[in-house]
Image (cartoon, rainbow, N blue to C red):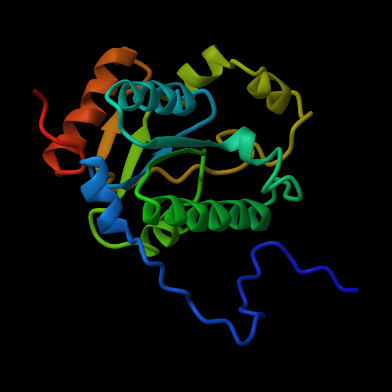
Length: 212
């Protein structure tokens, strides 16, 4: 049997028809009182993506809103455990996340994805899966020096020592978003102000109801 290479998006299934559900996204939005959206947090390792995504998620939960975090490490324990960190595997990893995020969007959930997602084309491809206004790209723009100083997992030290290959920011490139919906300096801004910026943006775009 020949293995399918990572990143191969050729359609192989036949006789497949999309099934329309009796309850749709608009029905769920009316019931829950808020729109669904994809919040795509991107940035270097150590830039605070997961921390910020989880803090925003906790705030949404406290207000009774339907939200869920897709975290890079957690996804690689299951859905993407067969993938490594080559360019092709990174592309396939983000392709899968984009498709899963689209399902959450349809389910009426605000889905927060926390992935390095280093390549601009991959993020653009995920954006192209949904309608305008449904994809909110949030660049956690901490500098490489700040991320290395934090190094919460000890990954930069290992990458510098040559123990980790294809590490973003050291031996593999990170392509910053050119025009994200939000760019937050997570190296200097405190967490509370970053959370407030995200929530303010969601209210301004009508994803969340206006603050009381």
